[in-house]
Amino acid sequence: MVKLVFLGPPGAGKGTQAQIIAESYQVPHISTGDILRTNVAEKSPLGIQAKEYMDQGDLVPDELILDMVQKRLENPDAQNGWILDGFPRTVTQAEEFVKKLLSTGTNENDTEGEEAKISNSFNVINLQVPDDILVARLLSRGRQDDNEETIKNRLQVYYQQTQPLIEFYQGRQQLISIDGNHSVDVVTNSLKQAVEKSI
View 1 (cartoon, rainbow, N blue to C red):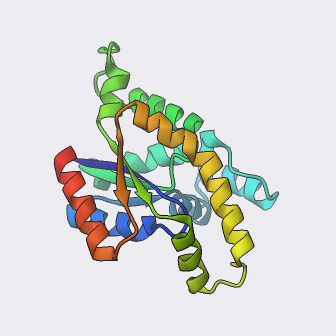
View 2: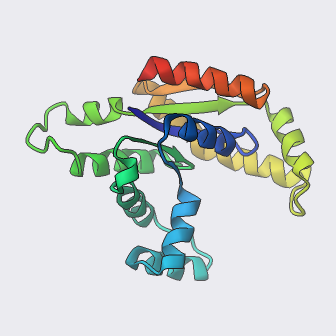
């Protein structure tokens, strides 16, 4: 069963690769941005709450995001696996995510070792690309608000937030690092090899 969390800085090709792998293994590609937009558009109870924060320009709290992710993972299409893209973003989210998976686990009576079992049930892909390549890739997209300074700032924020997360998953032996500084096909092949070993 393919259960993966995708990590990677802006421009690493995370979304592209997550989509390709999801299609290859016929599991849903779940992006937290998409979940948020869907819940807001459908005016679900969680979406209504999230919109209040967004309208005020505030970040949507972890608890709300976690509830949305949990609900999404309960859908029939996610029962045979999933790929999470853009979540968890912080160690706190990662710890809470495992607790959420625990609370919906089927072996509720077997508490001993259950957390370790949940952690072992999914792997974390970390796409690595050198900063200068990331900056060049993002500049070539030509978005209006993208200049070298803003891109470097985005990368800085990403590393500050995500470096502890990488160490967290490394410590739990869930992290698989992939060199993302190649063509899409080469990176996809590396990913598929890693996934096959982890299944």
